[in-house]
Length: 464
Image (tube, rainbow, N blue to C red):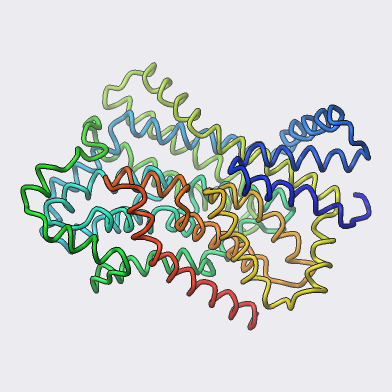
């Protein structure tokens, strides 16, 4: 590692600035890697820097833990696609509809909220399934689709953060392990109760159902939906996402999810020789997704789906995860480059000399929120900010779980408030509402939860 100086900050800063300016996280990370390798080699020859950057990317695969997490990202896409092809998602929705558990407006909203708690394997799947299930019911009971979009958005990414047995957990676990954090699994688990925005978002959504809380533009949306005639609310509704999903058995989805969730602690116990926190997180998530994929495949085959169709679905599903996998690969590479440059120790010394330590959790929350709002990506924000936050935690004697939670909370908050966020777009589509209306009606709730989270991080920093 070179003697750290101010130039060690340039690669991650370049990546963040480019990401905010261009909203292209992949090319921004590449730019940071190129600059970092150029600094390490002491050359400004762009071709030499590019060659070194490519070598650094290839070198990531030499680390077994990093390679396992990257493979997990691809396989989780395969598992989801096989569940869909086997009819598991459609059957789960049909099961809820057949039981007729919804007989009024309140239960329709609780169903939308509860779906996010049950289907936490991937945020997009959560949004689409919740939208498919609840949208006809919201129309039937003259509830605003903007409220539906808010409820499913508030329980997709936040719940995925709070129950990290999914791609969200694997991403952050990989970032922690790549940053050299000791006991990465324990740090990730300890950050869950400190993820103040995710907790506030889920609880605030429940409060809005229980009390009818309507903030800002949501009042007008609720009034317009209530004033609509039943015919207009039902006959004019667009077909819900997932109406055409193939029938199948709900166990094709339920069993693989259970296999995914239950395999993680078993694998951690085995690899940690009886100590969960000492287990290998990368091994655990890889075993878990293999168990989920195998069970989804076998159950789908029992339902009569041919092997060639399942193989095609698995390949397609893995392809959907390629952008996220590439993002994670480049984040790992930039983390390695920053480590070689000594970015963490230098940044820790700089912050320690300029800011009170108790302010840092709140500052990191704000930085992560601004980054996510600007680039429209929680994953991109985590890839950019988590390594930096972990680099300053130990030198300044700060709680690594608290700083991690500040990044995760800020990333999801900024994502919820951003009009260019992928999840807000999908939530709008799933609920059948204009995208800008969803952004406008959700923003007051996001700001309220975000303000609460910021206050909590400041207090936690003061008393930690």
